[in-house]
Each structure stands twice: as C-alpha cells, then as structure tokens.
Image 1: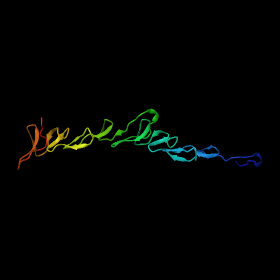
Image 2 (image 1 turned 180 degrees about the vertical axis):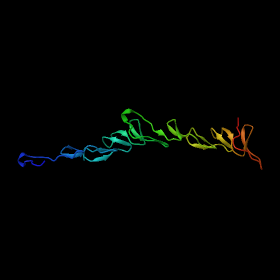
Image 3 (image 1 turned 90 degrees about the vertical axis):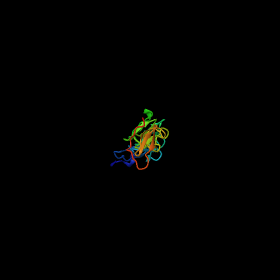
Length: 173
C-alpha cells in the first residue's frame, strides 16, 4: 500500500480480487473444472482422468462428462452410452444413460433393433446373422419368418425352386 513506512518493518502487497494470500503467495481462488490447486506449487494442476472436481491428482469428488461412479472411482461410460458431469463419489454408484436407439440389458447398452435377417445375441450383446433363409429370428437356429425367395416347408424356411419367388414374411408357426 502507498504510504507504508520503511521504519515500520515488513509490508506486503494486496492480492487481486480473485486471489487469496496463502503462505505469502497470491493464489487463485478457483482453478475451474477438471483442475485443483496444488499446495506444493500453488498452481492449478489437472485432476486424474474422469474427474470434474478434485482436491489432488488422486483424490476426486465428482466425475467428468461421460464418466460415472463405480466402487468409489470415476470410470468411463461404456459403448453406446453417455452421462452428464457431476456424479458425486459420496453418493455411491451411478450409471450412464443409453443412447437413443439402445436399452440397458445386464449393465450393457444394447441395440433396440438389429434389422432384417439378424438377432441380438444374449452372449455378446451384438447383432448376429440369422440362419440362411430366415428374415426374423431369436437365435442363429430359431427363426420365425422366412426371407424373400424362401417358403415354409415342414416348419423351416427353404429356398424357392428354380424360376420361382416368394415375398419375405412367411410365418413358420
């Protein structure tokens, strides 16, 4: 401050409004999202990957966008899912939301529709091909309607003969 008298001993400068005096240093009051104030260097440092707020590189409190809480840590969302930033570790486990065309099944976001000639595998949660000749199926060997140019014969889909055709959709039942 102007007017400090040298005979009065030591004086100090005032910190700017967004800073506070800590151990004789003016340090920021806020590092922003994904950063923390290092008590060693008094600089803003990055939080560990997946953390939106933290008190040190290894101690986080809320998760970043597209991360969720699992067993006390922030982990990335799985395929076909997302999450807003802010899940608090103290609130326990959280989960990501499935994208629009997907549904949550056994902790995985799986497609709602595999399309014609495919089925959703319950082992891998991926779309797999139906057996040849099937337009819809529930497994590689369990079909319910025949593909185009196939017809039902003795409960299975068989190819049409030479010089013949059939529209898709013959029901096996």
